[in-house]
Every structure is written in C-alpha cells, then in structure tokens.
Length: 325
Ligand code: ATP
Ligand code: MG
Image (cartoon, rainbow, N blue to C red; front, side, top):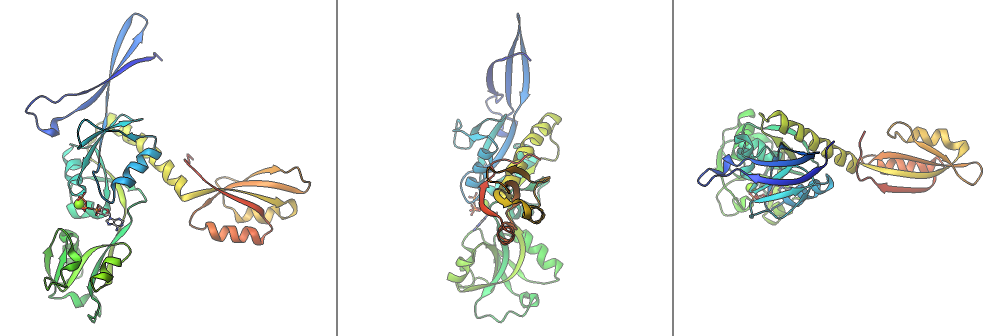
C-alpha cells in the first residue's frame, strides 16, 4: 500500500448547471517512489432532514457509525468526516424525490413519507428511531362503531395518498381534505368529521377533543436508496449499512456480567441465550465463577429476574457500543 499524501475534494459544478448535476468527487493523491498516481473515488450523497423530528436521530446514528456531520459550505449541504460522504439537508417531504432522481444516492426519513410520496426508491432497512403511528381519530363524543363509520365522512389529513389507499382497500367512500399542518384542529372548526394523522403519545388528540379509533400503520425512520446506484456507490452503501447494523444490534442488546456458584452454573447458563455461549472465568473465591454474556433488551428484565432466582449475584449490566457478529 502506498501512503496517501493528500486529499482534495472537488465539486464539478459549472456555473448555470442545475443542482442535480453536482458530482462530488474525492481525488486521492498517492506517492509511489518517483511517481504521483491519482485515484478517483466517488462520494455517497446522503439526504437527511434539515431540522425536525428526524434530524437529531439521523445525526446521532451517523455519529455512532463514526461519521461526523460537519459544517458545510452552505446551510443545505454539510461535509461528513469519517466516510466518503456528502450530506444534503432538506425538508423530509423532498427526500423521496431527490433520491428517486439521483440528486441524493440515499436518504433517511420516516416510512410514512416514503409510502405517501410513492417515488421509485428502495427501502434498505429500519433505523429504530422516530417511531410513530398513523391513525384515524374522531371527536371524543362520536359513537365510532367500526370502519363503516367513516362512510361519507370528511377526513382531514396530511397523508392523502396513504388515506386514499386505506379507504379503497376498505371500500369506504369518504371525502379527503388534504391539509399540511395542524390537522388536529379540523374537526373543532367544522372542516372535517375525522382526521388521519401521526400520533405518538396521543396528547395532541386529547387536547383537541379527539380519540384515536384506528391505527392504520406503524412508522419509523428508514434508510432508502436510489434503485440504480453505480457499483462503486453500492460498495460504499454496503459499508455504511454494515456500520448501521452493528450500531442497531448494539442498541438492542446489553452486556451482562454476574457471579455464580459453580453448582448452579448449568441452570444459570440455560437462562442466558448469549451470542454463542457465555464466557466463564474462575473467581478467587473457591466454588464461584464469573459469567459474561449478551442479553437482548426485549427480554432483559425477565432474564435478570430469572438469574437472581437461580442464584446469580453481583449482576452488572453494561451498554454495548458496536456489535459485529
Ligand atoms: P419538514 O419541515 O422537514 O417537512 P415536518 O414538519 O414535516 O418537517 P416533523 O414533525 O419533523 O416533520 O416529522 C418528521 C417525521 O418524524 C415524520 O414524518 C414522522 O416520520 C416522524 N414523526 C413525526 N412526529 C413524530 C413523533 N411525535 N414522534 C416520533 N416521530 C415522529
Ligand atoms: Mg415534512
């Protein structure tokens, strides 16, 4: 391997060209004894939400993947440190179009927005944050007796396409009123009989005199990509998804250390599924050993209770930063 001498980053934007023609490139200059060789490497262009409920989660995930979002040349673009990547900061509504058009190669946004915009993009996987649901809500005093209640009603929503699909699947004829914000106030001001909107805690519904009656879909942040990436960009995306998976596995699991009397070891081991099998180390105290393993967050408390009942002592639980299996 020849050492990398310097890295220069060029944006091949000629004056007057549309933004979509921007092709960020890195040129690595390597020195091979007397000769300087120029290696051309592409950058992956990632679109994330500029500000809102997805932006912190997106930046946090990138940071855990070893990618720092730096300050870019302007407020719509940021450079990434730690990965050949450039970041576009956009409204979440625009991300599916940018990715479908190839202006961005990949994007992070809510699955709700992917389904609403119906653009030609590939969903790579769930990212485990910005969880919410899309639900139908009606006035608190309405006698909701099932989906047929919606027949002939006016429904306000900022997700008209998803609502349209739901109504068609259920053979419901209703009037869709697309609204871009504050959908929850629509029934109160006489604009609609029901709403179809994002719900997380349900607090906004309550304060507007509404009740949630149907959950139509669950949503969380997802990674999407343009379906026709070059082989070079696909390799970069594979590297990125490998890092994201390691971060997500680590988030879903905890490292557990405990002390166990030797005579109860078999029973205790049977309670911990672990990665392969637990690590067992002898303690200075005769007849005792220390056991290390990994437990899933989902059944964590149940496993701890069972371990205590089986004779485990000194249980320590430690977060895992990355998990590569
Ligand atoms: P933008 O200005 O980018 O268009 P926005 O107002 O449309 O922003 P936000 O309210 O920031 O959007 O929500 C972005 C996404 O975050 C939603 O599409 C959804 O996937 C998710 N989301 C929305 N509300 C919540 C919530 N209360 N809890 C968790 N996730 C949510
Ligand atoms: Mg939006």
